[in-house]
Image 1 (cartoon, rainbow, N blue to C red):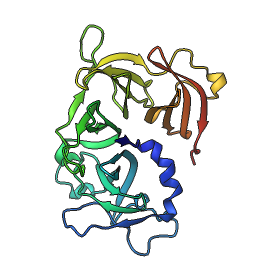
Image 2 (tube, rainbow, N blue to C red; image 1 turned 180 degrees about the horizontal axis):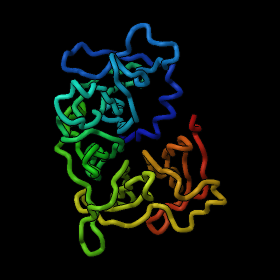
Image 3 (cartoon, rainbow, N blue to C red; image 1 turned 90 degrees about the vertical axis):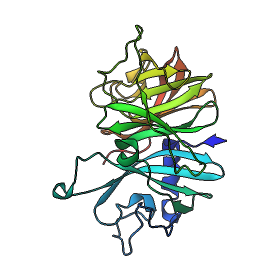
Length: 287
């Protein structure tokens, strides 16, 4: 059993962009877009990069898994509906879903993660396996100002549980409801679940922990106070969005994006339950 995190896969997907072909499943229930014929020359050929038929916008790649012999990838897919044609409020995007046995030939799945089934739009998050081996997702629910967890109910990942709220409590046991919530990530270390509420332009990334994925304790800022801006060459308060925290050997890696700088990474230690980076690098640069 193995989990492949979305941010970790992103570089690999970029490298095979020009080699990939999509398989369109002949099923009327599948709503995900197909690569149109005669696409503009400036479009990448990889099927996740195009905006789909009509007017639509693809977004962040999200929970990616290797599960039951297949790679599963979700990504934000926002269909643009003119305001005059909307029948209700704009609840935000869905997550499109594709899977593959070889990461070259892809199959579309029904689009089931979105406002109609989850009650809110699907913004960025990540995938994980519980300590019992159950696939789960943690994500930000658009318009809810909250982060949520849901679990796969079938092996094809076409059915998901009703989302459960991630709401940390302070030392007095009071739920923290007034904190801005943003892109989350989740990992396990020594049998404990840790989750980060990423940084937007108005707050630092903060950390919480749980032993059961239901009761969460607020722990404070993710980044260690000994963060050395001069050594790392980047400000501590630089934007940390779409985070992905994982252990590599005896070090910890934090992948993230800055909307100002681009995609980047930190390497360091998870010390005193805070992340202390010792190296920072860029994976691309903002245009």
